[in-house]
Length: 230
Image (cartoon, rainbow, N blue to C red):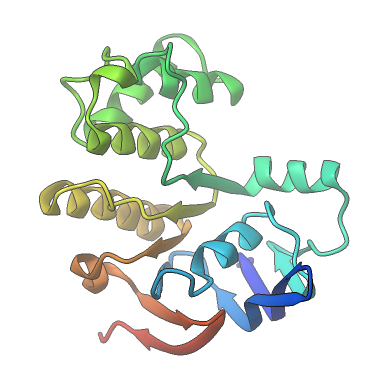
């Protein structure tokens, strides 16, 4: 079994004039296949910065980082792009949907990029949109969807990428309780049945019980961890 993520002394420092901001400081993590992990903390605690570093979007200022056995820290931009494409799927807080494409077409685009086309792609797109409760909105453009519905399209599109590591930034922030739980159930199902690793940065205390492990952050540091009992 490959270990999805191992970090040691993982840090991110920003310098603005005479000021230095330790956005993430000395984070040691090991995240495993089949695990659903929550990053909790107040705004400015460093959880989104950490998520971006784990997603190979931000480069760390210090420490080591292995992604499925690949040493990430010293890779060039081309190699980082390859690693993201092979291993990582993102669910962004800002949706990042293509405005001229319907919900169905947004998901189909990802499937096409993976080489899945025709009837299998169409069936898969419908299946994914139905899984997040949008079976009656598949042909709607983003402008005709609510914020919560757009978030669910973004989640379906991320799942279409079929990556072993899913990184989500506030995926339930725009959703009501019922649909938020539905989304987390889909992510949990993927983790447990397909050995994906799912990491969610969130403020949403309503979903604390769905995580296998919760990592609490404050001022860029991990202050404690809690594992689900049983």
